[in-house]
Amino acid sequence: MSFRARLTLVAAVAVAVAVAVASVVAYVAVRNQLRGQVDEALEDRAKVISRIPIRVVESAPGQFFLRIPTPELGGPGGYVQVVGPEGAIRGPGDELPLPVADKTEEVAAGTEEQFFADAEVVGIHVRILTTRLAPGYALQVSRPLTEVDDSLERLRTVLILISLGGIGLAVALGLAVARTALAPVRRLTEATEEVTATRDLSRRMDDEGDDELGRLAASFNTMLAALEDSARSQRRFVADASHELRTPLTSLRTNIEVLARADALPPGERERLLADLVEQLAEMSELVAELVALDRSKDLPGEQEDVRLDLLAEEAIERARRNRTGVTFTAELHESVVRGVPSSIERAIGNLLDNAAKWSPPEGDVEVTVRDGEVVVRDHGPGIDDGDLPYVFDRFYRAPSARGQPGSGLGLAIVRQVAEAHGGGVFAERAEGGGTRVRLAFPASAAAGLNGRGDAL
Image 1 (spheres, rainbow, N blue to C red):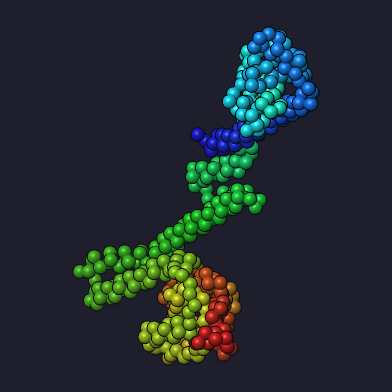
Image 2: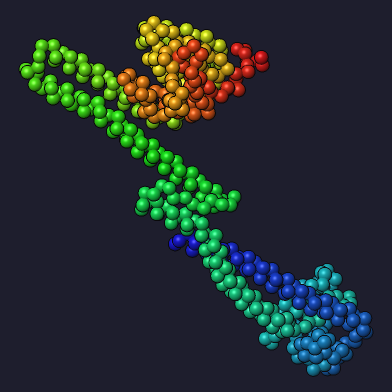
């Protein structure tokens, strides 16, 4: 069963229950009203009769009758019967006795209150009021319920027809409402099926409105955007990897082919080729590692936490000193707390230090300053041309002066992605007196305004 059919069925059942309850309540209310009017009329008739002197006349030995003539089982006056010590006494010519129960005799004796009861007399449904008339006597006044029963029968028929009509209308309206209400869901389903069939992740849904369906469409669009971005990143990663690996792989193949003819090589050439192969393999390993790091740096690999930026910079500087023995690193580190992933931030700082060391002259100096959520790295190399400054953080960008230097052009791109992933930024500028200054900035953590004891500074 489809969701629309289930929704229609639920609406129809709900309306059916509501109509049934309303019909039962209306029927009971009308029934009580009609029967209440009969009961009031019987009580009024009983009061009138109780004020009239009634004599019991003996017409024959053991036969008694009332002086009040009453029509047969009804009429405006109702049918009257007195129950006394002699038993049931009726008017002259009355041959239709009303039923006399033990409770009737108790009413005559004064030990029971008056009561109403329904009975069948010669096939006629009657309502009987039994009340005390005099000591030892009970008065029974009855009226037929034929008109009341006929009215209730007609009311039942009308209510059944109304209920059936209401249920039918509920089904029709339920179908229309379900079709209208589920139209966005249908469009969302069609869009999902289209994306599945065509693999077109650029498809978007109309997400206007702030109801549940509007939020569902917005969530669907967000999911498609994330999938599209992920697919774009994968395609770019594959394209970058294939482009950057093509040249070193060609060089490796050429050197290996030459080594395969080692017997024809001049003395010492074989050792030079082997050294080149080792160097090229190291460059390829570094390139692959940077490609992977670049792809992952966009999404932070772990939970963010409050970290000491100055301590991360200190660790990165110690590692750079071990790897770049020909460069001097001087540091001015001030306590600074930022919010982020320590491993990603440390890698970004390390890339800045490697880049500065690469462009520093022999025995050059690299100055590192950490203050207020910012890392500033300054080298004393040739500096960056003004025309290259806007592009130094682009993927694979290498200035004309850097094309003879080792590297893949991904280090600074990784720095920018890490900074942006943390809500910060990175900026490069020419330094006074030569060289380049790069500023890596992160948003300050809420804990930055606290001292070591957790008190406000």
